[in-house]
Image 1 (tube, one colour):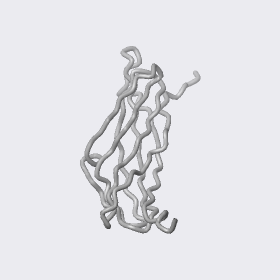
Image 2 (spheres, rainbow, N blue to C red):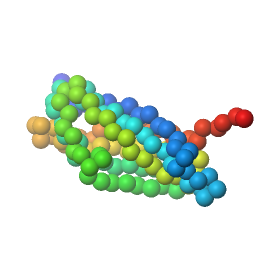
Image 3 (cartoon, rainbow, N blue to C red):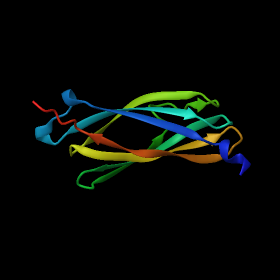
Image 4 (cartoon, rainbow, N blue to C red):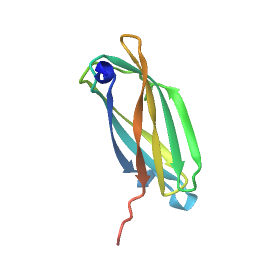
Length: 127
């Protein structure tokens, strides 16, 4: 049990709908999301890859795998954070994203940092 706190990553997400890049008549809904990744463990860890599962309201699923995030593979010291913004395009007004980051601790341990599911949704504006 003692090692539970060594490998721990906290993830916070903020989502914005980009109306000016979206085309509702063409079923193109563009979202930006800003993710803050914090190493809340006790060992430095490097983010090596990502795996996203993006599901729209029709249950169409896109899986995205890739190296790093925004072209970087940041190494986070304990208590250090890394923030980046990326985007997603949905064919529906609402969808969800979840996934994981694949991490390697400086002691060589590989572990996954789960990304809790979050919702992408077009805000309903009342006129």
